[in-house]
Image (cartoon, rainbow, N blue to C red; front, side):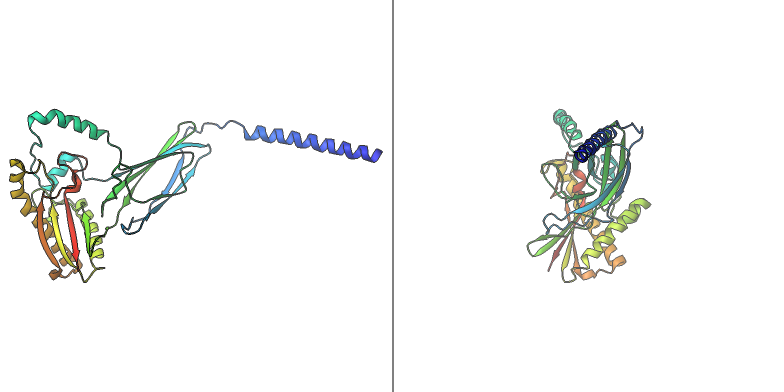
Length: 318
């Protein structure tokens, strides 16, 4: 009998100890977090080059994200935008298109309204979430805009990660995603579209741009040469394209074409000569054509997207 009492007494003591320990643990775990009065520490690793294959579904890049912070993360946001050379006005001058009004005075009110709408356009890509962002964040290179378009070939994109903690302390990381040359298959042919080669205004001379722009051009043209050498049995047509500053079929457009078609062909030839001279691409593989503004990919009055019209295309035919 005394033995049983001792057993029950021991059980009671152990129960009380366990209950007390549970209460203590609960108190410790619910201790309020203190405001660190500083933003989270961010470590982000972006691959040197992003090479999405248009022929592979869900071909993605992985960006490593690490957060070091003493309190909980509330939310995060990622924005990706193409890196363009300066303002819209500078882009026009750099591409060589004349600075002419795009619409008549009667249409200015509508244009101003459209410009207001463009200022509110969503980023090329945006994603948000609660808590910590994924440690291995993946992206397939597609826009979150309704168009769902892919990144442009041989173009840099600015990557911005913003992280907020539960006290609204925030930190921001900014980096660059460099897209490789993208080779698109079109039936038996291949096409490379590059909007990132920089020319001076009214000229095809690649040496007349700034040192920084020349370095950028060398990097882009080196990537193009590497892509072309993978297809030695293909003939290559280089097309030069310009940006329209008026609607197709108008007198202004017709006047622009008399200048821009030969200019765009001269730029196509300049690119070919650079590849021949500096990267030993066989001269007989090349032919050239100036498209002028005949095949725009963005509307002539779209200041945000018109940079895509100023491009060089490589059509590879076996």
